[in-house]
Image (cartoon, rainbow, N blue to C red; front, top):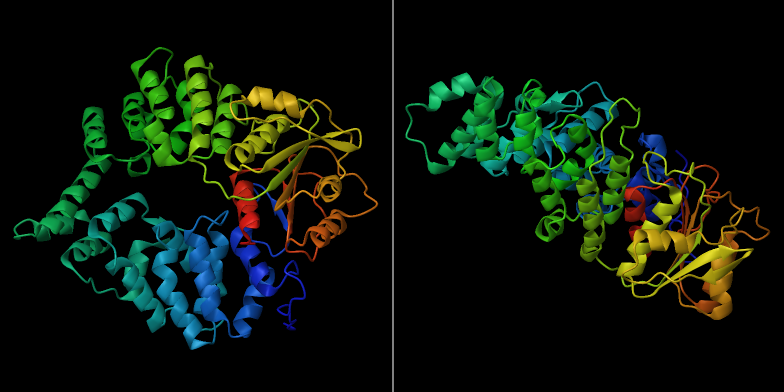
Length: 527
């Protein structure tokens, strides 16, 4: 590959290899366009900046960025980070490989990620010697040996295999020698099964740590072979078992589902409300429905779960539709559940963390009922209102503007307003097309200090005489700041500003929680 030096920057907004790497890790592309809910396919061809930085001798820095981004909530999905780490483990530079293998445990905290990493390693293999060198064997062994035995047992019970790899494969190929009695027990269970473990440990004088793991594994095995509904329910309640640890025939029981509901993670619960209503697990006026409603709007539960308002809105609108995406599953909408979800939506704003930046949000939304955010049941008008509320409620310096007849007018979005009120305020004066240069022109004229300009639209982009990048550059020059520009085309068609050589420009097609993550990254200079 011919190397290009992107690293001598004349301006902070020029895109260098590090900026491209950060984009790749966050959303799987080095370009400035993010498409919501798109399945990302990563390869060496899509990670040119990663390869260039490694060739420049910056492997240790690359690994540090991978580890930091994967752990600090800056990424849309783990795939690109796992791929990048796998590439680093196979680089010719010894220090890069050492740093990458050392970071394996902190990046792959869940076995699902470890299995995905291993599959990338396998796909990247470019020699006939295989992938299992001493360094990989040691890194995989450390992944098992450095875990708390109970946590390891729970991980193994929850996810035995994925992406063509299993715990049995990894233990066998890494030649793992357990570092303590607890890990030894879990490894024995993986390799030999419960029957041999039970026979071997039955007559031993076992330490407390081993007894705890034995008790847990016994329960896991017991539930796998139980056809007694009451027994399964008792084990769910006593050991906080999750859906993944049960068998398919267990999940045909309404009573088993009712037991799972009590401790089900809130995000999973919200996503399944429709199906559980359809299957009459949740019935109007039942104690289970009341308990679910209480959990959904509990301040303590919401604070612990930290579910974003936009995620709650998506779940609420999907439930209010009364049927699944393909229309096969249908349910009667329970007003109590709707009320609880509505309450949770407003309460969840309390737990958002402010960025302390200056935002301008310019909204150009038509009220077409057919205009829906792809992959959801949320209208683009309601989505725009919710996104606006997120920034207006958390950032003290947020100016909301609405498009009106070729210009922008200030829009009143105040604390305490409902979603319906904000939606009505934003859709008063829609345009037929969106001029992306107007927010920067408005701020330039009034000398407003702005860190991030955000446009929310479901209309086609206006064929502008001046590009938004030119308008942004003029604003920066006048104000002496490195301001950013985010274009959100909520319907995902025809809204992207063409790929630009400007690090401060991002186009979002459609919308999801990943888009919120990227806007926050952009505001903080992480991409």
